[in-house]
Image (tube, rainbow, N blue to C red; front, side, top):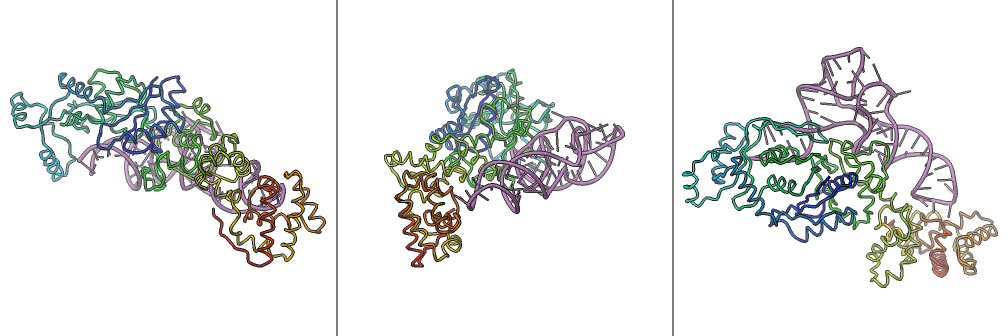
Length: 485
RNA sequence: GGCGCGUUCGUCUAGCGGCCUAGGACGCCGGCCUCUCACGUCGGUAACACGGGUUCGAUUCCCGUACGCGCCA
């Protein structure tokens, strides 16, 4: 089995396109077939090599590998022209010399009569003399397909039997006057020559499929199987687009989503394994994938659920790999160069280990864990009111600092024992020491367990911040801060 | 405007005539765990668009209506 993903390189890899690619990929892998790429760059003006690269990069990032070199439509124009000519030969297509103005007039007239416009087909039966006359005028013809009366039907793996009366169809254009093929011609020729067995693409092409079916029949080629998958909509139920915020795969990558999470999530937009599984590896999805599990109705993209799923992936990721993925986000936030990043790597791994349950995206790490790298410049207002009010707090913090200074080794277990002992000697609850300490050292009321936190931060930093906070509280000049999150 | 496609909790979905008092997940709300915040865990909230048929029985099949989306203009 051979399937393809056929993006137009007029933008970055879009979430909707990525989902189509995922379905094609899963289908190919499931059946041991080939997953191919075709770049639909017939619109030379709007296509660019940088866009092509962005799309390939997006697919690579998602982990969707293709099996043969991509086919570029821009390099195949002569083939389309030859195929169009072939249909003219066969009498299944014809040259049409109507000008844009003539067509527009027909359209206006139809509208005035209150009718739906369809091309009249008046160039269908031009005599050789008439054609010659037009040619002498310098008119450049388009090639139109001659739609015969009848009913066109095909089976779609998502929608079932679909049929349409050919009377609804225009004599649609195959080749424009400048020799550029239309979508219908190019797609049919390419899918045939690439040996595509299953066309899995967006719902928006369903209405166009009868035209393509007619083309297959006119060429005498076997039809592929079709599966038209529902579109992905934005929260306003309109097709997902720029105004819904991030729509390209690259944007999600730079926000700190993991490719596994994105693939998992978009695979579940419009497809279900049939049971209650949601968190699935690529292999599990390949195993479970089936066209019959694709739903007919369009799905709304809900980033809140993607966030949740990303959080699940982050917290279950291999720690070393997670640190590797998170490192660039720290570097970006703190302005590290490559060397500095490399130096920080072991420390970052510890930080990530403490924060991985508290974060949804890689980009959250340096924000939530800012205090692992710089002294807090303010203290959560609510925490100050709660934990810095007791007059004994400065003294407690200093005592704790003194005790911790003697801690050896500076590890969570030792730190905990030290703190609890001190609390007991002071006749207070451990919590009365723990909360002010966390606030003193991190500026925050929430976060990782205090003892693990201290151990990672290191003795020097902890002791210094405790003393500094004690000083601030004693002088009554505690700078307050809003939560950065 | 014509044609096509679609319609189960706010969102993603399970359901393919009786198993449905409609299941799971996200979100939201609450309990537990706990040094806090998370994680985890337990519980709660919330849906078959509407109207006709077919059938002993419809979320499920058929037909309309409404609404949404798409394609062509």
